[in-house]
Length: 153
View: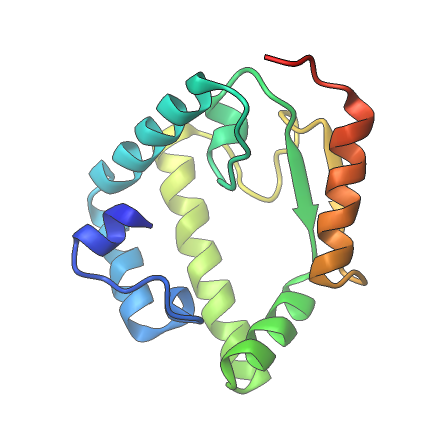
């Protein structure tokens, strides 16, 4: 996100990624993979420091070490959450989400060769969060991580 801010975008605003500006940024990323490569490089550098939690669509494939969790939820449920969060209609949320994901999948397929949302090989755990609220997701992920028993660094 810091790199998007440096480019003059405002991704911290709720709903920005599904907005017109967010879609323009997505189109820019489709045409020029440098942004994504820079972000991924910085995330890999952070991961090398150890003892970090990363929220990334690419790291499960690019980073060989670590424990990887996929949070699964239907497009409809995510659109419902986006519509509620951003005060937009459900149909508009579904359209924006599908557009964003289709192009994001294309970006990562062309850059790295994996199928986002279809290839689950790098994941250690898949959690369906469709019926969970944010706090329940957090607690469940913490429980899973605690049960793995990572060594102290």
